[in-house]
Image (cartoon, rainbow, N blue to C red; front, side, top):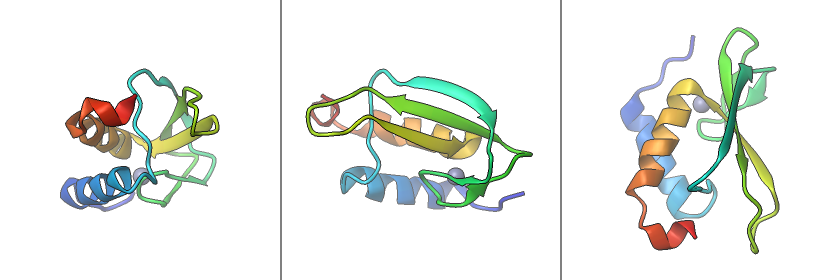
Length: 92
Ligand SMILES: [Zn+2]
C-alpha cells in the first residue's frame, strides 16, 4: 500500500496544475483498470497490478498534443478537486 496524505497530494497537485505540468479538462474520458506498474501522473509512484489505475484521456487542444494521464484512485480524486478550484478561463 502507498502511504501519502491527501493534504500533501493536494499541495503537489495545486503546484503542478498551476505551473502547467498537470493539465485540467472539463470533459475527460476516464477508464479504470489494473496499474501495470506505470507511474501515476500526480504522485509519480508506480501503480501496481494489484491497484486500480484511472486512465484519463485529455481532449486534443491547440497547444497540447493528445495526452493520457494515469492516476491512483486517491490521486484522481485530488486532481478532480484541484481542477475544480481553477478559474474556468484556464480550462478552455
Ligand atoms: Zn498517485
